[in-house]
Length: 302
Image 1 (spheres, rainbow, N blue to C red):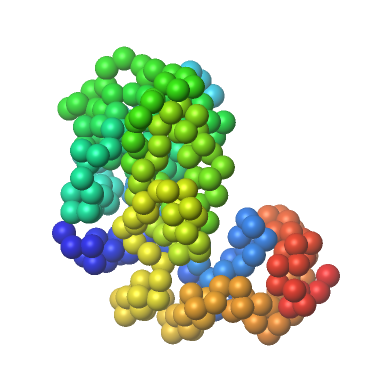
Image 2 (cartoon, helix red, strand yellow):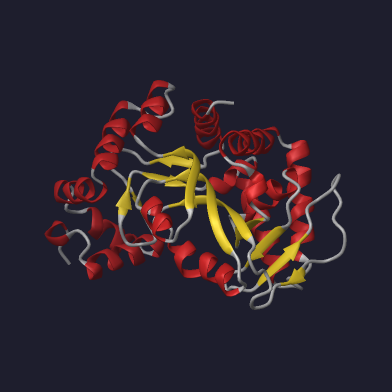
């Protein structure tokens, strides 16, 4: 499957599952960073739907509250069954397989790694289909190593990984989405290095094209992605009527200049921040963060 066909299929599924949501032209989303933007992405919905993704995240949280050595077998079995029964997820996994077979010599990688929690939606099944051990990385840099699924079965529990316990091991890290790659620099790459391993390459389902590729290059990690949120992505979305003309115009401006386009929006809509503050909840928290950080300069007034 050609890379362009993979991007087309992934784009279609992102919109159909609500994994990509585009805001009305005059009501951009508030992001956790205190900035605003015209789209929101929840790549985990590619498991089939938002409801299924949220249920699975809750299940993963319950596994995290238990013995973490048991988590990999539970997760791997769940994702194997989803691959067998869910057409959307099956298509995504087949796209991962096709892309890696065309672009990577998997013999160069000893394990597939994935970081808590959303990376696991795609890393466990990638390890399984390529018959590789899975390196499970938790947010506190605790790690376990487990054997791949064979015919839906996994033997025993995962083994804890200790300092220098993975000497000379090369990892292919599979992640759900990349923005600035801060999780790689803060958690995933340092955890691997502490064990003596290295993340040699990363495959991401969706690249937001906001500096992550440069950050990974600085870490010495080869960066690959199935789909990129570039102008072509939204050209296709507009042509397929997933978005309207006004949304498309706002997205085009944002892709060209994320900061400048949103600063201009705030100048044109001076009540936007104040309305968020008055509404309370997460939007109010993020609006306050926006004001305090001064990210948009004089486009926002307290």
